[in-house]
Length: 326
Image 1 (tube, rainbow, N blue to C red):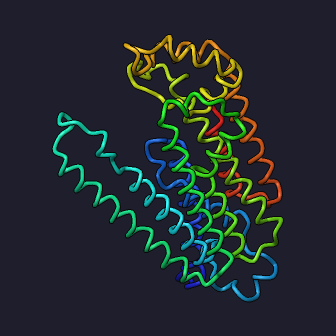
Image 2: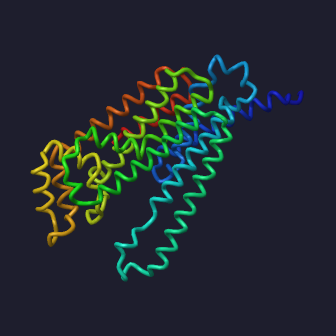
Image 3: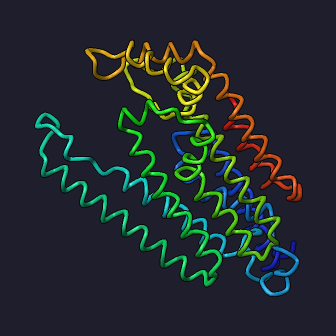
């Protein structure tokens, strides 16, 4: 028997990497406990599903590894760096609201400083990686996504005030705010991956739409868990800015919602979340959230139609099936 040629060994390795990528993506999607790297994987899968454009083949074909350019892999890593940086920054504690029973104030202040420095370090590395891509359009895209994240976090933090929580917020505004904090980074990095492979504006737009609608469907799915998960503890609070609550408020009317909040308050302070959960479940907010989740899922699937049939595209479709399944 003859020895395998170097080319066949390389092809086998690339084939192995391809299946490893598909397997890893499925694992991260179907186990919510291990979904921190979902964004980077989606960027990689989108890059593989689209492949190289006709205008890029002659100049960049030699750089392809398992159907993905090195610059696209770097962008996937940058996406994860930015996402992780903002997760770290969100861990900052408001020391003005702390009491002595919460522990040492100095420890909290030290933890805040470490969170700020760690998040800034990750963002600095992401910025350096962006510069190395040497593509001004992608730099602009990702920079605008960072701006969207900052704006989205601001909206989320401003929603802590009870007076703002009781405002009549239409679901369309909620979707815009949720996109900023949960969808803009993935959507724009998917678009950037297409730009790096020299795809036309139509392909870039479809990649953006997939990232946007997949993120919104996943966000709604997460928001729905307190209202459909049987093992969810009744003593645990849920966000009053979540999709089911906003839809319940929109359908019931602002005055009814304010009265329901008042009725469930304990000693005029925090609401009884067990009672409030039952009130929301009895309304139409939960069922409307199911419909909205499926709508965004279908929009994401529609965006994939422009890509050729492949394992990568099938995995991107399976992601949608996973986040719209209840």
